Length: 202
Image 1: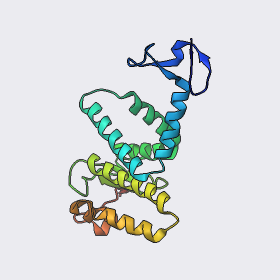
Image 2: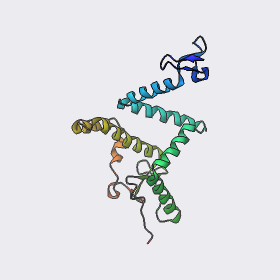
Image 3: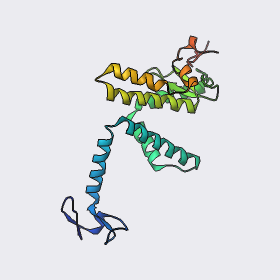
Image 4: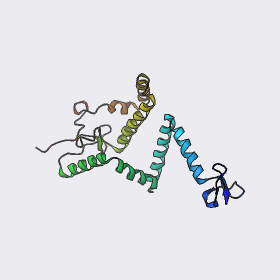
């Protein structure tokens, strides 16, 4: 048995995390208190937008290494399952697009940025057959950019002028090629053909 210095409860040793530097081989703070402190620190750090963006980047890199190593990340799969439950409209739109591709109602186009093999990106999930064709790399960049802008807007929502200036400054950091194509989401503005894939059968 051991007493937690934080909550002062006397608990079984199994309720304390192991630590080689401690005399009894266990931390002096119980698991419950450790978890609570960790969660409190995370919530405090989440107030810093730059920290959140840095963490997202770190997790993307970690997931990329797992995929390259051919390993399935348990956290990735749990996130996908959670995302699917929280986004039924998006899942439905993806299924409609796949069905339309199989039936020939729409046709796959190359990435409108680089010309590589592409996948469908939705600007509006309520219009499942209006999609922009982008390769996985540029598709990920689009969603990263959208999520970053949403996050930054929360931080600057009390000062719209500062928010839009911040977006302008961040845009200048992007590559010239990506910036050039980012706003080109209308068919008559994209060199070489349609951006949208909705091509009804004649």
